[in-house]
Structures are given as structure tokens and as C-alpha cells.
Image (cartoon, rainbow, N blue to C red; front, side):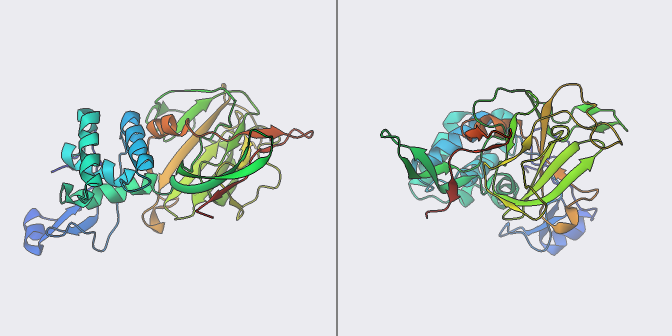
Length: 336
């Protein structure tokens, strides 16, 4: 079975503490507090408690390319979920030829769900990370005559959180040890750059939280429109951390400037920069049930592979005389 507790390269789902005999008698498989029918592999009455998202960047990019090439006929989440079934969740086995073979089968009309009875698990887990990041959108551009025109596109509609043209460095640091305040794991992804670098919303959503925290400094939390993703942006700039007018409850569009890189945090005193290196800490929490949000059962995933893909879609910004940055071109999701 693909859910091997303790394996590094799997979508791990904590199992209920139920006797195996009782589970078999009930005709159910139980993983991660998530109950499904043996026959249909359809979730029935519970939700995922843990996800380890470790799809490599190369697989994300190739699946994205297949989706865009077929304009959604080969859905990238379905494709990756089917390949996870083949690998039993062990992405150390990844070969591009395997992904291409499944994509070809899907183009010929074969359903990705036929990959295995655990497909529903992977589709739910991977979909929570990736759904909403690719699709139809329109954005303004400047044509050869210098006119501003709208252009329809199908592809990545989520953006790299670092605005276009601003340099940064990064590493795969998810799970690294942190000791300020108490010993804990790093549940985000750090992108190092210069103080004042414009930070943009990865995807559209609603500002759910805005304010100070002694660990994250000035920070913003944005909930995706489908409610499944909570994007957390921390260590924003001292004194002027946020884009002008940003407020809790406000809806932002993917690519909107929401704040500025800094090094605030590691202090119980508000507006203190005790972080040594300016950087953006960006985190992604998955929410399958509202009871998980801001609880002891939060699910945070490694964003390093996804950030490699989103680097291909950056938002251009312009600076006003007052020092505020805004996006240069308007952007709208959907077919218009």
C-alpha cells in the first residue's frame, strides 16, 4: 500500500487507532483519520490529517507543460496523482518517461482514476496544494505599437511571491531546526533578498490575518478562494511592512503587492528587526476541515519545489514617488 508510515517519500496519513480486524469487518480502509470504501476508494465522512508533498520540481514542471499543451485535457493534478499511484507515493523513483506515458494515456481518453484505488487519496492531497494555481486568465500587456491590450492565456495564474526583476536566493530548508523561543521545525520556505523587495500574493484570496508576531515579525495571512490554502508571508519590513491600504478582510488578486521584504521578528516587542538576514518566510498551510486551522493539527508543506515552478511566472511592478510599489499590468482570472 502507498501509505507507509515513516517513509520520507510518501503522502503520509496518520492512521486511526482501530483494530485491523474491526476495520476489515467494516469493509473499510482507514488512514490518517480518513475513511474510504475498499471498493470505491471514495472518502466517506472524514478528512486528511497529514500530507507530505514531495513531488519534485521536474515532475511539477513536466505535468504543468502537459496540462498547458492540452489546455486542461490532461489535468496536471490528475496526472501527478496517477503517477503517485504507480510509485506508491515514492517520488525517488520519478522518471519523466513514466509521466509522459500516463499523459499519453490520458490524451487517448483513459481516466487518471484508473491508476489505482488510492487515486482519490492522492487527488485530494495534491489538489489541496495545486488546485487553483493553473487555469484561464487575462492580463494586460504592451503591444508593439505601445498600446496596452488585454491578452487571454491558459497557464499558471499563480505568481512567484518575489516581484519581477528583484533578485533572491533560496534553499530547501523545510523542516530545519529553529531554536528561538523553543526548539521547533521550520515549517516554511525562506527566500533571501534585499529589504524593501516587493512581495506579491501568490494567488487570489482574502486577507485573513495581518499584524505582529514575535516569531514572524510583521506578517500577512491570505486564505485562497476555495478555502483550502492559507498562505503565510512573514518577516516583512520594519515601519512600513504592508502595501498601502492592506487590511484584514480585503480581497487581493494574484500578483497584487501585499508588502515588503524585511527582517522583523524574534522579539516580543513590536516592530523590531532581530532577524540577521532580510528574507521572506513563506508558508503554505492546507486546510481540509476548519478545526485544523490555527490548531495543534496544522498541515504545512514544503514549498521549495513549487517555488521553482512559480519562478516562471513573475509579476512586474512599478514604484511611485512615495516609495509604494504596485503591479504594472492588470490581471483577471477566468475566461472574461
